[in-house]
Length: 502
Image (cartoon, rainbow, N blue to C red):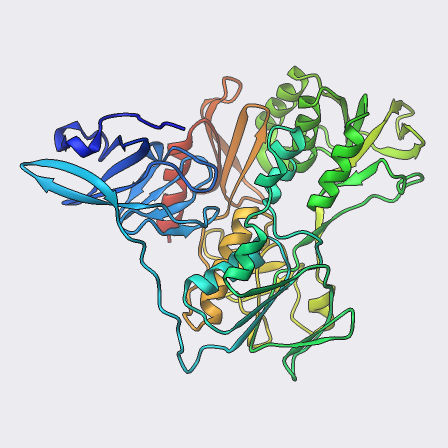
């Protein structure tokens, strides 16, 4: 695919051509972004390695650039992916200054870090879990030069996957399955990561420092990361175990839903959570009639407030979704869903999207301190030295909201996995990233930075219904969180402001 946008950088450009400290050009058919930071000029690939977001529309901060779509952060000097959701680096290009013009001809050779052999470094690291946090931790351990034994024990049948895609493009049929794995099988072999699938861990011997699998095998560790994630809540009601009644968490779950969707005329989605509504949008894209049943008065009000909740409902109704709010499904009798209100809905396919619960049984059995999650310190270490936790199970002291929090966001899980990896190597880096997530509803993206469980004021800059807004959730004079629609740069600026706030 040709990406010949802007000037040919091999022929040189003047600094006067830069706008906002950046200039988009190309070398042959590759898009290259020139970035000015202070007196230096850097050249990097122009698109994010996560979902190909346009970095030229992102935010430059010091020697970093942040993607406007999903807030990945890269070094403009080396191209390294500093913060998830991007893991792969950008190519960095050689820059030549001559006669007050900037020339770019070829890529710089990527730098590799030497394998570390510090006396305090562990010899064996075990990761329990095959989701976002576990994958990101394993990748970061190898990136940081860890040369010891590295084992991932995953209960899933598949390699770690891009879970957000399961309720978005892949479920909608607009993304092929080969896009879903985060890495091919060869990645784990090439990086000497022993990924063991279909392997459930049933106990941890904290004194002997080993875990025990369901088959009775013991796997020793020097450092252990618990990244067991969360499991979808499955409501108990008559008929809930029928084959056409699903939850969505794994690739296998998604395949099963797609299989039933192939011959479905009408679907019932139970729950108006982000997952539930993304599933509704995906099924509407497939041409299936969708009814959403949920107990709340308006969708997403507890997280986004009433105005955004009304907008999301109207958006889905524009696309044909029928809501049955302040109601619940009491029973599923064959292909009929019976509502508490007395209504009856045809249901060739039922998806429960009523939230998830953290998988805490393993940590509880091991005697780790729990508080509606696994309690960790600022370095993501649990109450037992040498054992760390990351992702959906971890409750950490968040300096931004000034409280202990646990969030179920993909990007947070990846960033915690990266921080935990570094800390297992003795780097002692506090986890202080601002929480971020994104949701996609048809052609409308919603970005959310920060964490606001309660607020006393909501300030709207722009127009929610016009799909052009920045919404601030405030407690007193403090902005706890910001939601946005098509205000990508402002969302990045809000994230940066929260990072620098005391």
